[in-house]
Image (cartoon, rainbow over the protein chains, first blue to last red):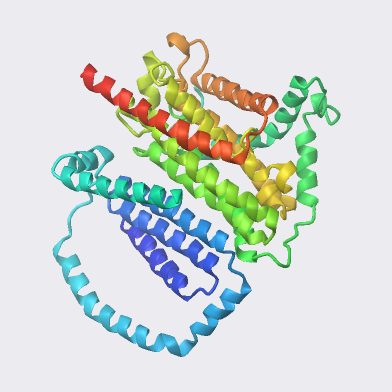
Length: 162
Length: 324
């Protein structure tokens, strides 16, 4: 499973980088979908198939479809691509890249330290186990989340009505 | 099949399932035209080979030798990517379908969710196809397709949950095994109807082929496609039809089990018989029902099917709780 983990992680990192540097918004969205699917593979390799498939259904399959839907309605053409390219000349990348490298340099030793300590065996957590946790000790959080979604639904309905 | 050791996930198994599924999907081009002809008092294609059986071969030669043209104004990357997505996601969905004991690709514990995930990724195919074509008809078609597929996915998922709750598992093979003494179509008849309707909408076939309604928007999202790229959309639609029929068989009609525990025929034959019956039913639907208007489709889904599927799930839950 660890090969799957590294493969998924590598694809996720590369495709996320491609999302950032793309000037064509549709291509960027395609890479974002790929990145989310790679994250799903990472979850799967860690023994969480339920979370992996929810990631694929909810994020890659539903939310990104809505993003693409909005892009389709805006009908961005060549003009927006040129503007995007004009906004991001190579020298803009210097400062953020340095900051990211500094952060990465600080994070990496920590990650390797944790990896050396917790070398826990692979345990697959099935759908039933996740549901029992969600509707057992975490039931309050689930209910609060559903309140929030219901409020969002009602306000969207209200705005659409006017 | 005593002379070969059938085992889930063996190389022979995977290769034969892939071959059979693609050949069946290609043959459906001929089956559909013949059956439509039969129901409309015409002959249908009957010239090439016995009963016109070789019509498929003729169509394939035609589609492979046609000029494969990418319009200069199209976005090449997404234009080429779009038709491959639908083929890949539907063929991947077949990997979790249990055809018979020992026949299948993967025995996944989250099979139902995997099918739903693949169905939701299938929406990208039509959306990218229409968007990259840079054609107003294609864009209109893919806008319609996106809204239709995202909406009907919701009821499709909820209508399945009744079966999942009764079987107590997301594993499609276990769902079939639970149905040995009674098919889920009886307790979950409402769920079956919703799944059937959502399945037609999800594979956007007539009567729900609004994304490619010829009279309104040319060919919809695949207006600019030609040659084998169009062929992939075309065969992808038939693959979707085979997939929906297999899923209905697995989830609601006992998979490879015969009715009332009758085991006269081999399991694979029972499965094929039931799946073909549903494929024929879908073709009959196409011949019998006119296309609804776009707003009728959406309001029917959200205002009728969604509440119905939620009530179905609620009642199923109450019955299961009361029975325990």
